[in-house]
Structures are given as structure tokens and as C-alpha cells.
Image 1 (tube, rainbow, N blue to C red):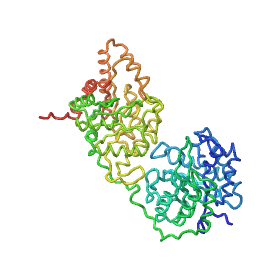
Image 2: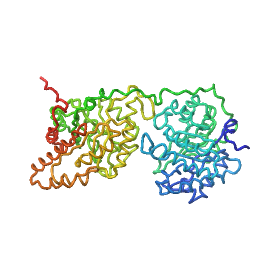
Image 3: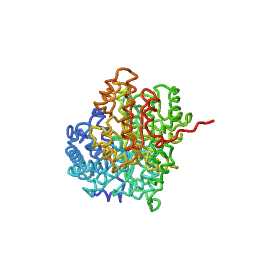
Image 4: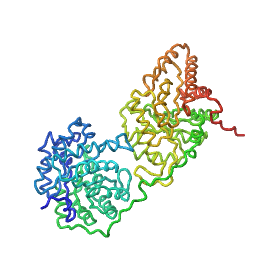
Length: 624
């Protein structure tokens, strides 16, 4: 029998193997082991699994290298062994396959967020994949299986890496939810044509769902593409019993659905998580007599309207009063007000009313500052805007929510009329009162900026239309005193490129450092709002200098605060220092964010009093 994969696809049904990890786990390999590294440390175990699938009658076996890229291997301390592990994995599969069975080099996601959702560029991603591809080629693979991806940009990076080194066949697969959409929300009408346009030989779906949901996905996909379709479902959804996952779909059940997938138009079937050689033996028997289904008609693949069909955003000046003030060139004033640790907003509402009377533009509401548990800034913002009439500027951080939760939150905030955002990465839980809380960090501030920018263009995370675009006025944080200033400047450039419209600095005590920073970023200048923190005591100054990330209090300020003798004198001196810094910065910044230490809004009002009235937004007129 010829070992030409492309000819196989034209002539008959092809059967891939099933899970590697499931079988190794059943043999006693702990789940926290690096399964890919077993190609080197326990080659006989891997070889036995390969041979069991060969004996089951499959046409193609996949190398045990799904997670053998540098970022994934780094998590286990094996990042410098990419070539060794991948080449060993390919040689083991080649040994088991013999002359009649093909070997597919298995390649999975990197496990890091790539642009636009994270700091890893697509070029860097391709280079990580290229390192893996080179080793798999050296080990003698016949084709590549690029599988279980959720990010279309990442799978494209993997395919570019392969095509840069080889013209061997490629099978490309996304993973899906029960409703048939990708894990980033793209439906088959979006991801099907995009996969179809890649330089690959077959496309399809694998993992995450059982055979019933995957059959529906195949039925939806088959009329959207003209390339052969592959389907590799899990053996159902796992049941957790005594902290162990058990997949309960029988071999006969899997085989029945494999036959149905072929009759729906799939050319390649196999298995993913939970499947074993017994499942694949049943699938092989079930499809042996099946002929490839005839496509109902010639498929014409067109670009779908739902993907990346961005619309013009709402003009900046129409998004909020705050945005209008920034655009007008006035010196905007924001006062930071912490949400309560309880649910009583009486003091906050009273303070907000006083600030509104004096012409403060927005109340800046942190999101769990220093990883503390407080009232949701969105809930507080809704009440301030509805009951006081002053606009809010809500911090939104990446620590506590995954990508989909963030999108849901932001759409909900917009529906409540909230428009002003400060997008930040957020402090890790270990800094706060709940150090064992789970940190999510699906994306960082750069990825979140990209997400909000997409929403402002009428698109969700998956590139689908959301109807009318959101109208967020979006800012980002910046630290002009960050120890690695080169990195901070690079991140600032990425944030501006991602769509940031203004920035707010960390509390500034070293004005020269801020002015130097502004000079270094003038090529990507957006409106800058300087953070000002009025100190209230020497102890407060020491705390800010030593325990608040991103804050540096110069020695001369510490000495001034040390020299005062009474509490009132310390507050006065701290306010004087803040006023002096603000006056020095006014010619260079678009506005100021003033902290109200311990909720004392009068201190913030005093600091802001040095701003000339003609440069500020007029306070609201008194009602009759």
C-alpha cells in the first residue's frame, strides 16, 4: 500500500489513532508529569502505546509531542531539550509504524497568549513552532497534525513555521464547545473558511466535546469548506470520581458516531482524550466498508460577514463628558475613591457629591487595589452616576476573570451606561489578604486593550459582530519610575498600538522622572494624566515607598515628611508637596488623578485648587 497521505485522502477513509496521555495515565504515569519527556526517560512506555494503536488497525499514529514546544516544556524545566524530545518522539513513532503506517508530528498550542491578547508576537510564536518542526522532521515524520488550537492566529503561526521548512501534508484542527463554536467564540461559518484558506491538506475539529457534539460540528462545517474534514472527538465528557477523570463512552458508541461522521462527509476520523486502542479498533471495524461521502455540491468558499468586519467606532468626543474634556484640552481632574469593603456606600456618595460640586470630572474607582476584596467598581460606579450625576472612571483588571468573563462584564458595564475605563493587568493575589486565591490572567493589559478596542469596533473576542459597537473611553496605566524603563516604554508603545486613548501614571513623587519618561515616549504620545498622592504622614510616605508596587518616594520628600511634628502639620505638608508637584507638571500633562487619602475628599480638593479655573471644566450649576 502506498504511503502517500494526499492520495489516501483522495481515495478512501483515513483512521488516526486515539489518546496518548489517557493510556499512559492508565499505566500509572502521574498527571503532573511531562508526558512529552517520556519519549526520552521512558521510551518503552511510549513505544508500547504506539504499537497498541498500530495493532488496532489505524492508518496514522501521532507522535507523543503535543506539548513539546519550548514554552510548554519550560514549565517542567525541559525548555532546553526541545530538539531532543521531539526527535526522540518522532523516531519512536517511526519505529512502531513500520512500513505501512504513517507518522504525524503532533503539535499543540504553546500555552502562552500571543498578540493581540498577550505579549508573545506571532513571529515569536512561529519561531517556537519552527524549533519543534525541525526536530520532528529530523525524526522522520510523514505529515503534521496541528491540533486542539482555539486561537486562529496561533494555528496560522504554527502552519507558517511548518511551511517554512517542509511541504509535507498538514492536518489543522481547532477545538470547540458543545455549541460548535471555537473556544474563543468563533462559529463554523467563521473558522471554517479561515482554516480552508490555509496551506493545509485537511481541516477539522478535535477534543473538548464528545462524539454527538462533534457530529453536529462536522455537519455544519462540511458545506463551508472544500478541503477534506477530520473529526477526533473525546470519549464523551469526563466524570470525576475520587479526583480522577473517567471517560465513559464505549468503543461501540464511538464507532457508531465515527460512521455517522463519515456519512456526513468526514474523510478522517480518530479519537482524542479518553479514547484507547479498544475505541480505535471498534472505529476501524465500523468504517472499513465505508466509502467517502459525496459532497452535495461544489463548495464555493466566501468570506463571511461575521469575522473581523469592523465598523467605525463612535467619535471620541461623543463617548463621555470625560472624553470630551480630554479632547477639548482642558486640565481634567480625576479623584480616586476606594470602594468599601462592605456594601454601604453612604460615605462614598457624600464624598462624590462634594467633588461634583467643585467641578471634578470623574471619580476614579480602583478594582481590588493591592489584591483586596472590595465592592465591585462597576456597582459603585452605577450608583455614583445615577444618584450623584458625576461620571466614573472604573479600573478593570485581568486578575480575576477569564477572557469570556471579561467580555461579558464589559458588555454589561456598557449597557448600564458606564463609558470610562482604565485597563490594567492587576496586582497578583499574593499581595493581598487572600494569597491563595486563584489568579486568572488570561490576558494582560495589552491583550485587554485589544479586546476593548475590538468591542469599540463592533467585534467580540472571536471576531463576531456584536451589533452596535461599544463606546468606551479607554485608558491604560503607566509607571514612569519602573526599574526596567526600557520594558515599560515598550509595553506603553504596545498599549498605544492596541488602541489606548489616554494614560494615567502611577502616583508620581519624582517629577523629573515623569518628565524624562514623557520625552522618551513623545513619538507615541497620547494624553497623559499624572497620578498625585497627597501624603498624610511620614509613616504613610514610608509605606508608599516600600510597599506599593510602582511607587518611588524620593529621599527629599521623606525628609520633609519626617520633619513635621503633628498630624495636622503632616497633612498640610503632604498637601503642599502635592500642590508643588502638580504646578510643576501642569504644562506637560493633560490632567491629574488625585488620591483622596483615607477617603478625605477635601484634601484632593485642596490639591486641585492650584489648577487655574480657566483650564478646568466648569462645575455644574446649582439647581433651583
